Image 1 (cartoon, rainbow, N blue to C red):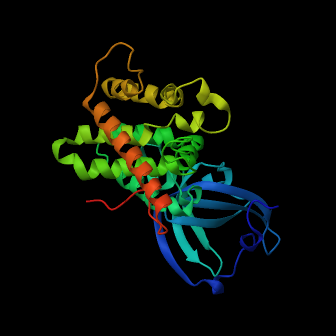
Image 2 (cartoon, helix red, strand yellow):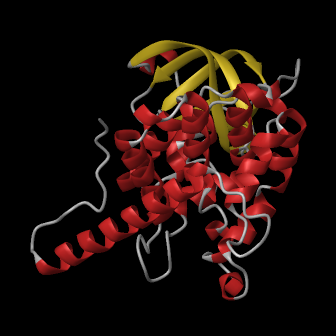
Image 3 (cartoon, one colour):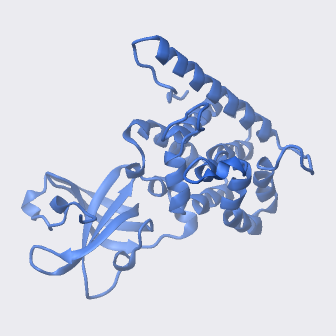
Length: 307
């Protein structure tokens, strides 16, 4: 079966365009690629590009002057200037200028594309991207970029369960749980926090259960390794990069994943806050689940309306 659906694999005619819009330096994640002949028999590379807004197809003739799109690998982030056209069956991007953006300029809207999320959890995805985009500390923004440029981390956080049998125990549960914590934090605590404290708490909420993408998925790793220790493995390179710019921030983030009985015991105020939000979100999910079992009317496990 072809990687790109057959109805998208032929270069459409411009007369079929329904509407179009101009994009300037818009970032996409490469979701798939396939080399084949176009309608005229020319060798062409077809790319599926995705971000928070949706997915588009781009057809790049092979040969001639190489561009970043010619060598783009799966999950790479590409920056494109060009025309986005709507056809009856799909969107197609006509690139004019392409580039590989620097790590510090990556955008969460491209790192976490909607194609990787079950449709029911799109509101939760938007919550995470909204709070991430509000970060005003460059070092923390770049740290999150380094974490989620790894497609395994991104796909894991968007699709792992929040637990196996406790709260949010279903695909997308970790995403929903994280979004619920961000909403609770955003609606309750920011007025008492300065920008750096807010950014630290937001960053830790986004990554606090990252280790579950290893311990709750696939092999029985969770039976022998706490998810906090697994998170430190996944964060090793991003933390080492952060260490070069801001050692104090790197140590604060590391400290959250330290086993409670270990030394040193210096705690950052965000640790207790996040633990409280974590428990509140879990209790709310369990209460919502009990309500769903006792009533014929559907309920949502989380509310994404922010104050």
